[in-house]
Length: 239
Length: 324
Image (cartoon, rainbow over all chains, first blue to last red):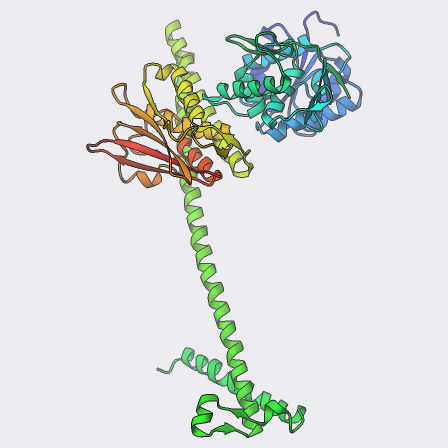
């Protein structure tokens, strides 16, 4: 099957969601395959080789996690977005463990899903693992070990709060991408609240101090006024 | 009074010790040597000295030992049972209260979900039947508002349940800076653009003592209090955020000149999803103050409120956080 439009595989067992999301994504210019459980998602993914998979976590027959694990085991590195149910930090760590490229908490704005789909597709290098699924990230003299939750500059370990480390992790896995403060809040803090964007700034300031990064002439984290932050150094992923 | 219960009591408290006494007396006579020291006599202590009394009959000595030993065992058992019964009553009361809380919570939750759903349904009908583009756009707007309310409710419920399990992070927190952040965040909110928030931060001692806690959660707590004050007051009212310390704790007060809270609502406003009589129509999840309460408790502090509906009118929330 060949399409000039990118193909998305949408796996969600709730018809109220799938039936509304599919036409929305079609309108946005994608070819959408819909399945309602993990086993058929795995099957379709192997048969049709979609460009991107959107997986719900709670599904009958095989849940999203298990599906993703098996996909990766089969050597299929198709970019995948997990739709998680609860925005807990533990849930997010798990999403990484299973090799998800991005995740979105329900209930989400469909436009947000679309933005993530496009961003993930832009980042994707066909057939290769994405940075989001790599355990060790290197940018110049900065090394981030995601499994050990440690970062080091020139081999010297950095003293970072867990939140600052999570911010760094998200920025490094999304290099050269403008990441908004609201988005960082949702990803790192797991909940959004009005006073929160300042909290993000505080953690970024902490990161810059630790990385010895001058906001006026940044080597790592650049401020995009009115938008958010961007990680500008080239990132390589391993393991 | 002769009742079965009285008979039972006599049997237990007199009969059983007597029986115990006889058994011990017989056992002692036949199992112990005749000159066993404890068996020969009991000196009657003080009365023994005064009256020259001591008991030298080994039968009687054995009997007395048995009698009092049984009585002691019975008393201990009675004491223990009474204690268990008391605990059980306490626990039953606690369970009853939990059940009531749960019922209240479910009733309130039901209400909080029904309202936006009703709005959503009405909006969908309007969307289907609306004749003009304007009507349809308005219906879409209303539907979005209803959905927004449900999402806010869900988010806050999740925060509360996460706070039940989560261990808080502990960093030194600069409270004056945190209050500035809250004020800035409140001003950024378009709904409160024109509102004035007076920050009163003491200059002495300098610098203001740091406290230990989770800066994000503390920010959320103070923001909730300030947002609450903004929500229940109008543009002509003043809002003051005051910072104090008394050596052992720091105290953050959020005061407003609003209409005040009815006295019958005051004890309940920190309950989850409770809405006071003048808060029915106000936007919000109904969980803001419950969140503040839990965050304060997680930091070993507390939150209180005083309010008056007559002059001097207004409400003051007090957040107390221990210094460590």
